[in-house]
Image 1 (cartoon, rainbow, N blue to C red):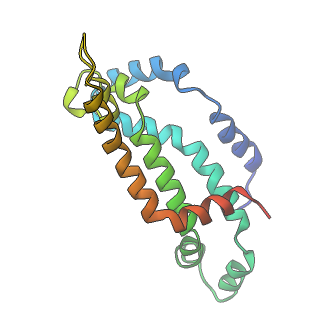
Image 2 (cartoon, rainbow, N blue to C red):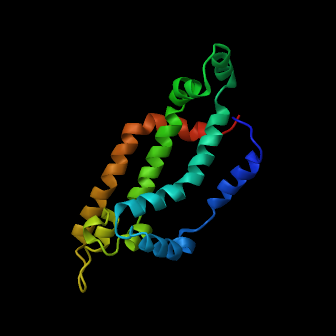
Amino acid sequence: RFSFPLKNMLFLTIVLLQTLPQQSVVIPLFIMLNQMGLLNTFPSLVIVHTAFATPWTIFFFRNFFATLPTEVEEQARVDGASDFKIYYKIVLPMSLPALSSVAALQFVWVWNDFFFALILLSGARELQPITVAISLLRGRYFVDWGLLTAASVLTMAIPLLLYALLQKYLMRGIVVGAVKG
């Protein structure tokens, strides 16, 4: 809710970053991470997923924070609370639905990632996530469909469990963050 010069231009730039396809930056990312010595390591995936998640997360939180009542913050400011205390004691607890929604959606996106995991962890077989490991279950001349199906069902179990645990917060966070006003 802070005002500063070029606030809307910065937000527009962040939103436009959402339109950047993964495939258009994979080669420069590969070269850069290789030069930094981060190829075939988990930090490379963390950096890439964080970079791609930041624009939509900012967009989501901005819409959510716009729905929060400003009166509560103003009252806390009158009572002498600092900006940090207002954020920590008032805004953050009110943001639990949005936080859980972003965490769950980001977890599912990272959990289901195949593209970046396949490319950035191609030389480290022991680090490859389950989505890449499932693709390796196929034989050269034979596919064990029972094994492939069982692995796929087990892969879906963790996101479904997360959804079941956070369902109450997810629905509130998605609805409130998507509808302004």
